[in-house]
Image (tube, rainbow, N blue to C red; front, side, top):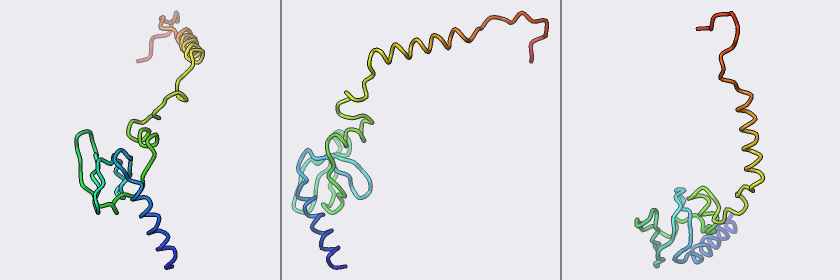
Length: 117
């Protein structure tokens, strides 16, 4: 059990040394933020634009990549190339929508039965 604890401590130390201003991190509480400054035992995290909070280094659970951070915060990847729809796909969707609209008729039915209330 002593070896696994030592290994976890080494991983935490290497992760904490990887923190530098501009890095994206996740705290142990699940909050995502950007590193603004790294001090001896604390780190300053920007949790919202213009809002900086001080955390203990040990409160940082992981340093994450910029693209992953952008996907989490903005709900989309940094480069939306893979998500963009081609013109053909958009055109196909428009054709399908028009076909559905043609099937639905708003004209009054020519039946002798009274309309249901």
